[in-house]
Length: 177
Image (cartoon, one colour):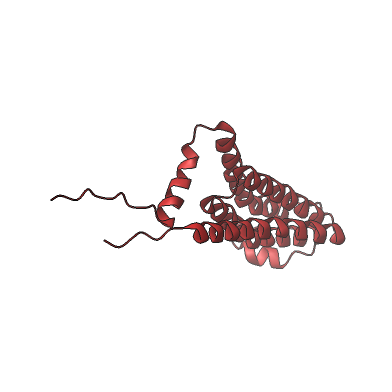
């Protein structure tokens, strides 16, 4: 006597893989939201290069940029704007990794795409303000926008963790054969 095969219950991993399929969904708002977040990741990846470009721009009475030994050249610069632009450049690299991880983890965990996109746009705009405030020597404003941008990253990572925990709590374990 043949026994009909029981369909396997989806595991948490299968459900997460299916949620990745939401990138291919027919819902244009959802697709647009996550693509905006991904564009923000690209924008955040390019921001450090904006600030180092500002650091290397010629100044009246300043040394011309030396591409043969850029780090030595930069170390000898006394112009505060050049030094601040370099600091903004370095800080942008430090902020990028956690932000990019937050966007990807939130998307994989199934966080609402509009929420991810909103936090990503806020992060990029805040980081742009951070660099401008750094260049202009406005330390209090710079610290405030740094904290707000950091809060966006924390929100992305925390929402990813909560979504993953909620999915794990509702996951069913497949019956053993």
